[in-house]
Image 1 (spheres, rainbow, N blue to C red):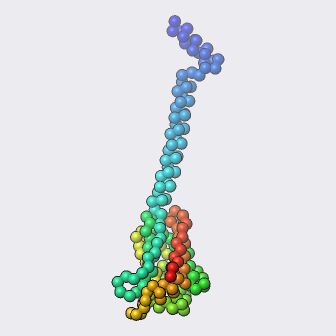
Image 2 (image 1 turned 180 degrees about the horizontal axis):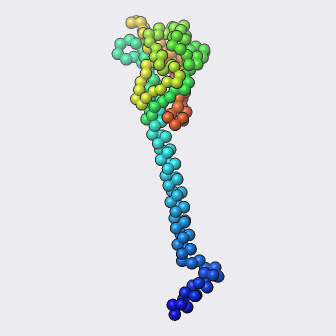
Image 3 (image 1 turned 90 degrees about the horizontal axis):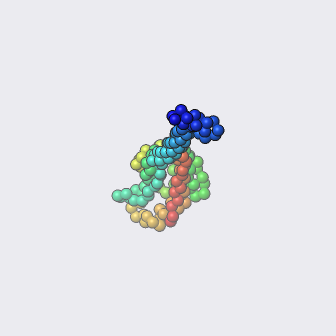
Length: 181
């Protein structure tokens, strides 16, 4: 009886029905392919997460700190280091690309801002800002009788800053600073 069943299965395989071994092999191949697709998707998702987890975000802060100097501070509030690729300033309509501290200081004095200190390390391109690093871009010494909102605010409204930067992975972003009087 057993040999008749074997012959019957062999005849069925020969006329188009798959054998058990072939079915198992095809099932294994489908499962392996599905596992490969899931692994590739997971790796890409992890790479995207890794890129986002080291993305820099530049911001600025300006105003009085303590006594009378007026400071403009650039800070990296992101989760990764920032590489500044371009630094430009427009002062009273005149654009300065990657200005030296002397060029920028001269233009700021022309519009009536008494520059006390400028950070030359930030203006040099390429410059880097670590995570949580703050750099004072500019410090203005005010006269003891200066009224901050009207006098300095109107002059700072003539100054626009643009900083182009990129992440560790080369993703580009920019920060534009425009003061409103």
